[in-house]
Length: 175
Image (cartoon, rainbow, N blue to C red):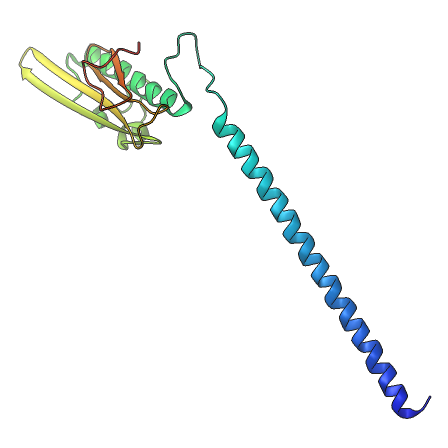
């Protein structure tokens, strides 16, 4: 081989090595992209399956239509039990959720925030006379639909629900 041809052969081998390296890196990148696409498709399929799964009642006679409603109703029952325990202990209803904290199973965290996932809690206390006091608790969904009704309860402990407007005393009972 002549000197010029030798240089050409070395450059040719070098180019082939670079080409093989670039090809290998490209194949690895394509493999990673494919793996990520498969994982994303699997996650999307699982999320869709979970979202479309039918709600499983938590107990016999469970009036909830979804997990979100079950959580909202559970919160309401906890507050209602805490209010009645508070009145039994203090002779009056608590005037705020914060005053109820630590009563029954109502924690400070539960009493501190009105944000309850898909719902917003509202508590109102009212004293009509020295012998008559009331409270009202509402759970309003952030987005009302067939799986997110609004709920309302007063000191009588009966929970009412409405799927078209804010629930009130005239709404159907759920308990």
